Length: 243
Ligand code: IPE
Ligand code: IPE
Ligand code: MG
Image (cartoon, rainbow, N blue to C red; front, side, top):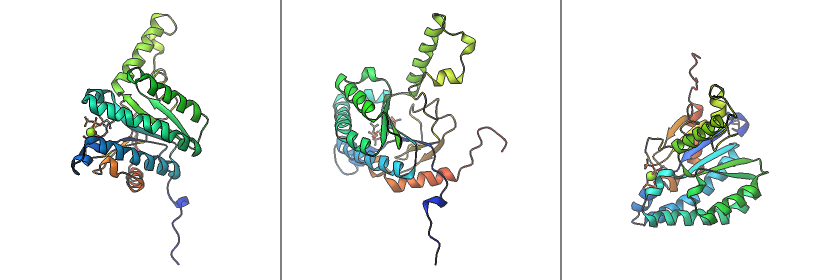
């Protein structure tokens, strides 16, 4: 008999997977639908992907849902995206909690509506004790803006005499990013065929493996996540060494 391939035979999954969820607009356009229809289907792909990541044993999943630059989109699209976000937070948190998932939102909350900030705070508080998977949602997130904030915070500490400039190191910068306490991403996936980072996890992704897939985000699911992780396992991560 053929030996069964059990999950015990597979290498452990990457600890931290991050995804640039791109292609909702093109998915909708290809079907003659408004862009919002693509974003709606994108939210379903989020559900599938979170579930699959948890089942595969990923510890941290970061999803890039809205960038600092996405505020430049037409007001109607921004409103629709914020509406979907509200729906997701209202409808999905009980499900996340039931599955042992901790939710954490990274990005600039000052630009989000007060009601959304409250929903985020409630969701984070409710799920804070969960340990199966940490889901980081990047909202109004920009890597450069995040580094600027860290620089400001360090400058204030220096100006007020709490630290000396020479004590600033990678660790003190890490501690001032919105991802403080989260290990760097091992794998960054981008869908829709675009091959760029678009201001995502600039500092944290210094040594991430990059996987680009042609699949449009609304079509993403377990198979695509598994394929990306297979790619990841085929890579030789050297971190600058001569290994
Ligand atoms: C990703 O899909 C969702 C967000 C950036 C909010 P897009 O809306 O960027 O879709 P395309 O790139 O136009 O196809
Ligand atoms: C990146 O996608 C941001 C998110 C997926 C949230 P964009 O569609 O905004 O990126 P560009 O404009 O193609 O670089
Ligand atoms: Mg796009």
